[in-house]
Image (cartoon, rainbow, N blue to C red; front, side, top):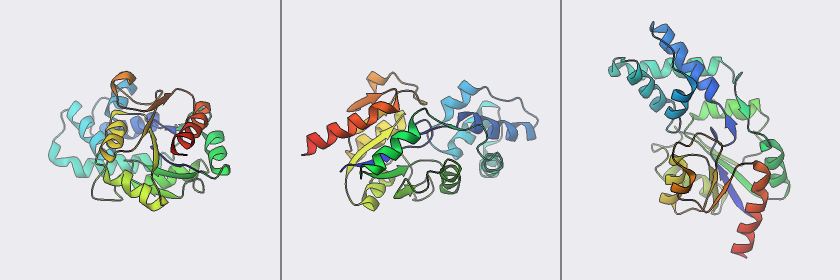
Length: 218
């Protein structure tokens, strides 16, 4: 069996509309104009503190208030209850299939751990993952390799990492972990320029990738 660790935002879930709503509510509270969705997507990947930092920077807010305004964004995000977030097509079926086949599944995200568990509960994914690490689970966050390596350690073995972004590709490379790139997430760089062993645009292709890992490791 194969150990598979997934990223969350942009890989399993399309959360950009909820992240945009949370950031724009903070900006509205400050009397500022909202940011459009492509701009918010360009800010995703390094956690809500970084997204808040970039949103503040885009609207000229005092960066000394980042801790305060990050808490506001997190609060707005939590109060939104994931109303605008969706699973990418095929995610639920593929995760259930992989779990039923006996593969060990984990999650490593830069989303705060409390918000991560809320999302997993919302989509009935809590029981799918045997190890979950959020952006505040350790002192380091991706692309530092520590969170990904800790997730694999918690699962008891190495394996493959599945993600969508530059941050994920760098994390896998620094952790020396084979990387499967989901091409329909929040990546800004052409897929060909990111280090990866496999790429896929539909989740229905992932089980075949996992099977190829089993063959290579046999």
